[in-house]
Length: 134
Image (tube, rainbow, N blue to C red):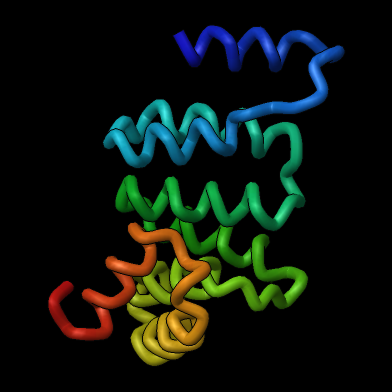
């Protein structure tokens, strides 16, 4: 099982690459939100200041409808003022769910300007929001 292998990697300091961030997204895509959180947390515990890891944590919490928690990780991901289009769309979606409507729409519009580099699930949800179908 994938989770057993991830735990083994956590316990073995000689292993140089961890796949927990990637596994979190695999579990998100299959709707297994508890497993997604488990893997995202494993990666976060290794690299709590990493922008990509904080983005993953934000998206996992967003997917779990834990919007306040999502925004906390989002803020950590933005500490370097990243211009990553996916991060901007995720930010917009999270801000909208937390009642920050203008900022949310602004971030989604900014992220969608670079649409080809945005993962399909984030792009589709962002487009639905802008079209008022969400």
